[in-house]
Every structure is written in C-alpha cells, then in structure tokens.
Image 1 (cartoon, rainbow, N blue to C red):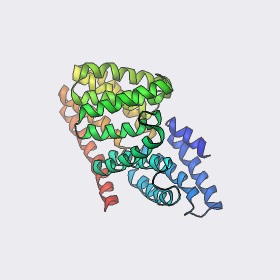
Image 2: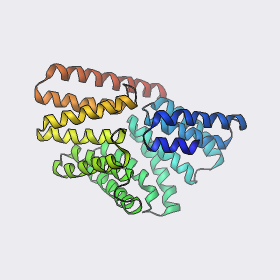
Image 3: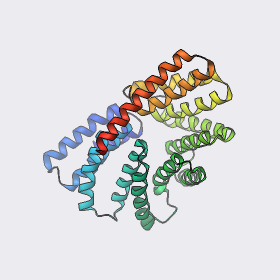
Image 4: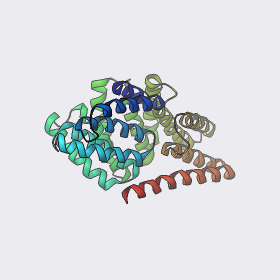
Length: 292
C-alpha cells in the first residue's frame, strides 16, 4: 500500500494516494507502537503528500515526529536521515524560511557527498532545493549552476523525457523569467510543457505550473489571449486537484491579475489580487502558528 501510494503521488493523483497511505499507516500501528522507528518512513510519506497538497503546517507536524524517530534509530550520518532533512528543507523553502532550509540542506548535502561523491544523480533534489534558496535571494548565477547541474545528471540517468527532467526545466524557466532572460525562458518553458504533457498528462499540477510559466512569458511578449488561455487551463486543473487555497493557485491567480493589469481590465485584476492576498495571508498565518 505504501508503494502504491507513492506511485499515485508521483502521478499527481493525490486524492487516490491519501486513503491508501492512511490504510497503510493504520496497518502499521496495529502491529507497532507509534514510537517505533519503523513508523517513521510512513510519517515521512504522509508529510510529503501533505506538502504536495499545500498543507504545510500539518506536514511539519509529521516531519517533527518522524525526525525524532529517525535521529534516534538511523543517526545523523545515514542517507535516509539526509533525505528527510532535504524534504524538510524543501518544505521550509516553500514557506519562505530560507535560513532554516539552508542549514538543513547543507547537512544533507554533506552526508550525500560523503556516500555518493559530489556528482551523483541522487543528489539532484538537494541541488534543486539549494537553487530555490539562491533564487529567493536573487543569487541567480549560483541558482542556474545548480539547476543545470541537476538537469545534466538527470537527463543522463533518466532521459530527456522523464517527468523529473520536465520539472527541472520548469524550474529553470522560472529562473530565467525572474532574471528577465525571456529568449532563454521561451525555449526552456516550451520544452518543460512538452515533457510534462507527454509524461504526466494534462491533468497534473506540475504540468499546470509549467503552463503558468509559459503564460507569464506570453504576457511579457504581448500575447495576451494565449496567456489567458494557459492561465485558465492551469487554474481549472489545480482547482480540481486541490482546494481553493493551495499556494500554487495563488501563483496562477497572480499571473492572471498581472495579465489583466496589462490589458486594462482593472476590475477583474482587483478581484484576483484580493484572492491572492487572502490565500497568502492564510498561509502566512499558518506558518507563524507553526513557528510559534
């Protein structure tokens, strides 16, 4: 059941993954106590699912429980410990807690490099989290170096049509847009959409966010009708997969609001900006409560 849930999650079928993972945990708790280290991987999987669903506060609760068991049973220099540290660091980047994320991801990287060496493909998720931290700090050259490094090893190991390749291309496209490198961004964003459409399908949150990237680019180029169609398509997908307050939904609404600002539809833009603010304020309040 745990493996089946992981397959659903990789496909973006979160509604299917959740009950299967809950059943798996229920079976484990009938046979083991909650403080047995064998429970930790199930807690981690639940946390990863909650992160994908945008339920960051609940995810951190499970990560805290899991880390207590992992630190005790695996030790600080175990690969699984490092992987979980990387997962928590990614959660912190999504919450904007970059200093905390950096501390954890550096610890994870040290363990992984000691075991795998400095250029192994299994370190790619760590480099990507580090790149997100660099992007947030506007350290763009270092962010690009890390993303390109991850892209190279993943393409070599998994192939150019693998979903992870598409996800990395999507991240690279967002970086180029942030830098204003629109010519580079167009090629990369279009590649990302193609790879993700072919590997994960249209009804997938990663594909939806790739559409959002391309919409941002089209809006900059003055292709407003194309941008609006992509945004609406992405929004329809996310609102079917997640609830209305998912953080990725706010990102798409922001793109649409910027688009309406450009085209003079101020009334609609104001409505969208208000909804963006509501979603993000709700998220920030939840983060503050967790930190407290």
